[in-house]
Amino acid sequence: MVELTTNLLVDLGGWPAMKEARALVERGMVLEARQEGAAIRAQVRGAERVYEAQITLAERVAQVEVRCTCVESRRSGRVCAHILAAGLALLRPKPMAGARPTVSPKPAIPVQSPAPEAGSVPVKFEVRLEGALSGLTLELIAHYGEKEFPVGEKGS
Image: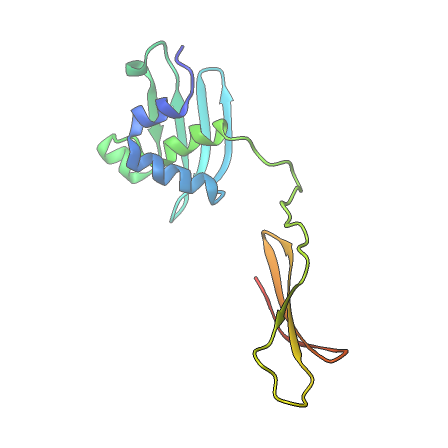
């Protein structure tokens, strides 16, 4: 039986469909992907609904069977991105449940204001970036002498 690889998926559907399949996987649109013997089945969220995609591996590439419930695949028989996303989801490692990538805390970056006026207290600015990839907070703090004044904060 042929092995499921990225090259096999490209051979089945071509580069444009593979590019779209990668985007589906990266956006978390593959809801479930599983392999049962030679059959790879997945549920892939499309623009309008969830599609059922299947790849059935065989002894040779020419004998591999694919099908999807999307209109494009049913009408033209073309290997769609949903099918390739099903295989790609099995090839890519899944993150552990509950694990969130984090950004390691960076030291504050002090920024000196441009030429202060004579007799005034120099103003220093500090930028703090904290959080995880799913929600970063950028904070700008102005230092007037010994006092701190938050200037602005933006969260994503």
